[in-house]
Image (cartoon, rainbow, N blue to C red; front, side):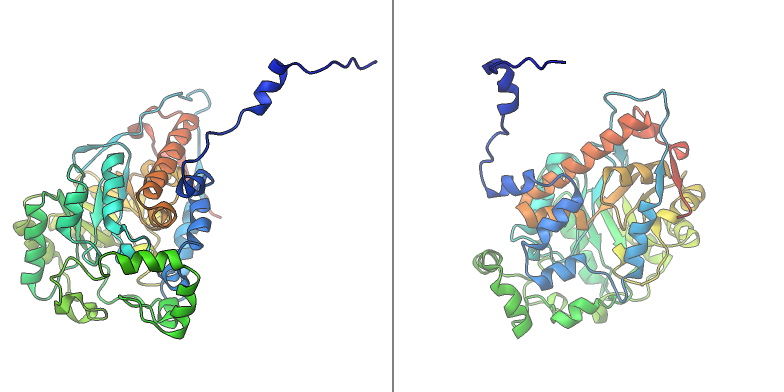
Length: 407
């Protein structure tokens, strides 16, 4: 057959010549190239010194629990309804009885200004913009009050490490109450701090210790160094300046190391709002926490950063939901890094999922815009998964849609 050739017309060429809108700055260019949390992770690694990266990314001891957390999500099979696809699913839900735009909570992370000088303020502002809760850590590098000022309309929670001196914890509760925080999240899995071998080798500390190793890492990141040196000093900002409680390395000595269910009841008597208990790793402890008054619980092994070889939260989820799900909301964390992961957690009974490392990667890449980009990616992935699963609302995602494969 003879090929007929012709001179191309403009209207035939025009569709091929369309270009993307020009990014306004380097941050937008970087974020525009990130189509997943995996992409954010790869780009984030280049944005911070090696010791900071190791602190954020790493787990405890042999990092077995951390690897198992992720492996469990990789075993998830999502099972669609063949004739039930929907074009515009509703990803909104309720968390602690209040509307949330998605079943996501931004988890507490310590020392957040190491990832980006804007730190917790940026995270809180991004959470406020997205309409999801954010939990500020006891070991934050921004104060309770300053975070409230950065996100005055946000759903701000305060993550509490209970101190042996209850007066210190009562001061935290008082400031959080005064600043309109919604909930207290009591973490119970940190009797002592897990050993991060990478941190030990790096001499990691707050403020950073200027050893030969850290100096070599800092030299390759002058922008990070400049931002840290020209903004407020790095410190544990939820404690008064100069307080013993704000000194690096003192946490194991000063933090309560014998938390019992009675401490949950005590906290309930001191706090006017919901109490969330984080770090539960068994059905029995979940029942005891709810019996003591917890309004919600978080199944968590601290992202694999505490007890190595600890139980995997996703695998515990169905049994815990069966035991206490009619009396308290159940959340899950440790390894969540995609909208599909969130859909899996919801399908297995979780009210929502906590996200930690994923938003820190976004923070490293682009500050507040990077955290917002992370949340946008997760919500878009969740919405797309729901379209294909055939689930019009979050409440429609059930056990029939999720299966944990044997391998």
